[in-house]
Length: 71
Image (cartoon, rainbow, N blue to C red; front, side, top):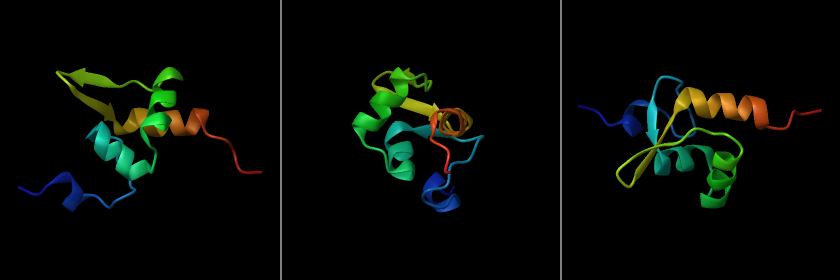
């Protein structure tokens, strides 16, 4: 079985993929503070034990709604 990293290009967010927070951070280039702020602003993050996960579609939606538009 191939890993998610081998199937999907780095930096690409797939809507139907559930990402562990560390992988989402790597793909977006955001640090801990960036994700902390995103969670405060409404990005849904789910926890199972001590591991955090974010759905690709939620991350894409957050970027589309909260991101600044290019002029």
